[in-house]
Length: 180
Image (tube, rainbow, N blue to C red):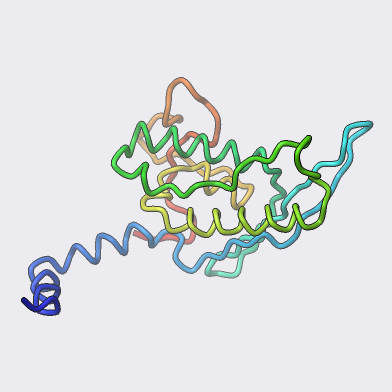
């Protein structure tokens, strides 16, 4: 009973399995997504809100810096779960948990410590999403991290779900930097 021998048998029996698994991650290989900073903004008499400035860098050095509120992360998560439930149900369990919502009357959303903790949690969430199998098929992720709308694959409908025309629910072609 030698585990090393078993592993090498699998490697020789099905070398293409590793290639297929690598191809699943390949579309965002070499990409970097970080939350560079948090930015507070006030609109009229409403309390200030916090935006998180993403800094997405492609392997070619192209940089995108979209601003996102926590509610946009929440919308991304809900769209992602709906898409995976419909199109890739066997992978739903791989979707990471997002940092929980904290209600304003229990937590001071303007407290720097609160903002930093949420920023760290959202950063971790984004990093884990980048390695989610077949994430490139969900255009909402590409749109979220770059601010650019991803194009639907040719020959497909314009929406991954006929009942939801949100850009966060559409399947996508691989990111521009990817080749297949």
